[in-house]
Length: 58
Image (spheres, rainbow, N blue to C red):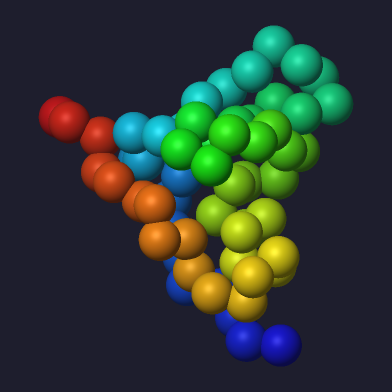
């Protein structure tokens, strides 16, 4: 299996932190919650890097 391209979800404007202990990380663009970083979930599900990354405004 290919290594995922490192996408830092913490720098993405679609990333969110939830109050759910079981699913603390979320992607508002693709509308899902996970225990892992959304970019890793997307890579393992599709085999391609996340296409929704948009850097947060600074």
